[in-house]
Amino acid sequence: MSTSASTLPTTTPDSDEKGCPLDYHWCYTVPRVQLWQYILASVVITIGFSICNVICYSIFSKKLGDRPQGTMMGIFTSAGSLARAFGPITVGFLYKQWGPRVLMIFMLFIVSTSVVALTFNYKRLYIETESELSGDNDDDDDDPININSSERARSNSNIDIA
Image 1: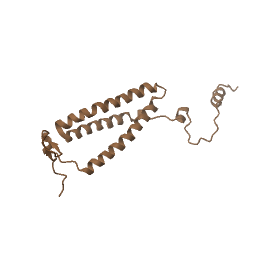
Image 2: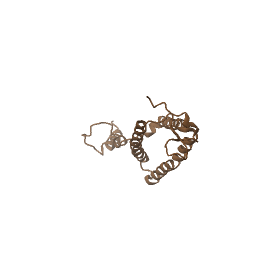
Image 3: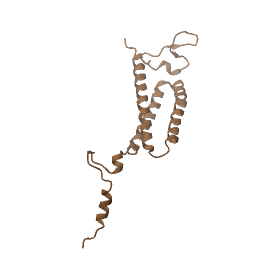
Image 4: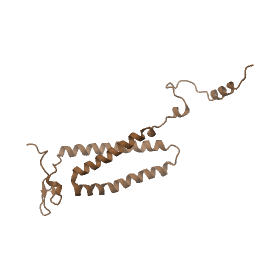
């Protein structure tokens, strides 16, 4: 017997059973989340958040360059803290009013908006390496570096041959 199509068990405030409260009108039509789905989603979210958090801070720090790191990282961290403070309130409201399906559509909208923003701003995320900044584009670093070679080239180009 497949339980994927079964609805959530409903409870009354007086009962000891766990399940979906009767005052949530969407409880009668939404299928229950299986334990393996819950565990898989928890693992993916936990690992994904940790990796994405580190990558975002690294990219933001590199893109700042010589700008004031402390101030900008403080603003970035504050924005993340505000999202962690108001996100659960928003998600809880959506979940209580309309159930998990509307909540998933809302999350899909947020992720899609982020992907579109990333697509349009991808070139701005490129971080130049030190060799690209110095003009050294070859891959082999065994060539000796002569600091005065550019000065000599400029002075030789100004010589008139008569």
